[in-house]
Length: 137
Image (cartoon, rainbow, N blue to C red; front, side):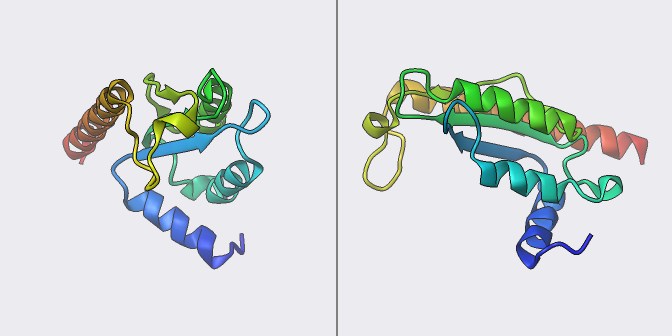
C-alpha cells in the first residue's frame, strides 16, 4: 500500500506507543469521517497493522447532553475490528463549551478525576502487555 507520508508517520507513532488514548468529538452521533479514514489507512496492510493487540482507551466530548457516547461506541467498534485491545473505560464530557477553558484544558474537577482514572487504566494495560511480551520472549 502506497500510503501518504502522514499515514506512515501515524503508523510508526502507533507502533512505537505502549498504548493509545483517542479523544473523539461527535458529529451526527458518530465519529468524524477523517478519523475513520485515518484508521482505515493505518490498518493496511493487515499483516503489519500496528493496532493489533494495542491497548486503547476512547474518550470523547460533544456540546450536547450525552458527551459523545455514540461516537465513542462507534469508535470502539472500529478499533475492535482492527484488533485493538479496547479498554472498558469511558469518559464522556457533555456540554464541552462549558467544560474547557480558552486553552482547551478540562476545568470540571469531576471529569478531571475520571480522565485520570482512564489514563491510569491505560497505563496499567500497557504495563501488563509489556510484561506478557517480556515473558514470551
